[in-house]
Image (cartoon, rainbow, N blue to C red; front, side, top):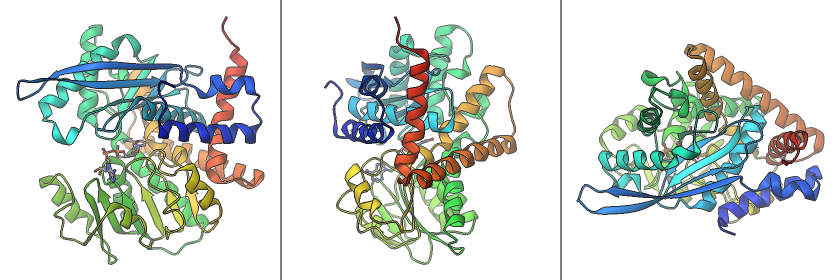
Length: 416
Ligand code: NAD
């Protein structure tokens, strides 16, 4: 298949298992599972050296049944159409679980943002956006930041689209700076949502205060989850980025990390703990383990060896189906599955889009009150479904999301 890849196969495997569980008729499976639109464009860019390089940019819009599609844009050297298609599929189930009127989407450009200058990043972003103009719009497909992209990326995209339309159109992207129509709280939303759900799990498991937390990935999501959990009394003992991890059983000084990262690109020379590899860090003992970087890091090799009570999946797709089989035999680990755990981002993105469309903006208290209410509802629903059907949390979360999409497609029927 055009977009086949290990990650896409993993997303399909998850869907197929849940489709069996829900007994979805065969005739409805393919059209629910497969992405509606896959777009790949060449993105030529004049580099600082004067050379011209061509990057590949992708966008996958998974389904259009319930509204526009919604999802992040990722800059990473390993991005391919299959990965983007898998992430788009997961966005569909995530939006449906949270009750948002969106289909899922995802985009990506195969580039290494750490090796590009700000000017080159701007050129890549602007050209990609202009190539995507026929396929995006506030009522068609709305992008947001993901790995390797940020508020500035969204600001450039909004500028390109607005120049094309001839009027400022903030609702074309979410996760943009507040000064051009972004929402208060969006930057912190995913990480704070992760922290909210971790604290709910800690309550339910009646764990004592002062949980030890290890995070893989200290970007937007990982850092905000860490700061929020530390504020609520947790002890962050391990963090990492693409270059490796830092571990300190007495607790890592997060303010010192922040100071370090303002002058350095990685945690490599940070002196506040012992340096460990990313794989090794995942195996250290803690109460809360938070993969907040990339896919497929909890695998058949390490799922039996992780030592935590709560596995909070802040990243998308961090756990392989083979690892899930092992985790199901470890009921002492409370899994908060990705489509629930990191939904805070898309929920506040939805609030941002609504505010932009209405030209009426909410304060931060209103945003977080609304966010926690939606997360609480999704969390309660997932736990209830798991308990009643005697299934694991991931199957429960996916089943709720997938069922909603199947029903919407059933009601609308097939055109013509
Ligand atoms: P980011 O680019 O801000 O940060 C990513 C972090 O992961 C960085 O610290 C980077 O160094 C590290 N990293 C990258 N590759 C790694 C690897 N192979 N091993 C270890 N660390 C690695 O990205 P982000 O926005 O924080 O996104 C992180 C994850 O959360 C992704 O899976 C993303 O899809 C998911 N997510 C993000 C949002 C959001 O609002 N940004 C919302 C939902 C889900």
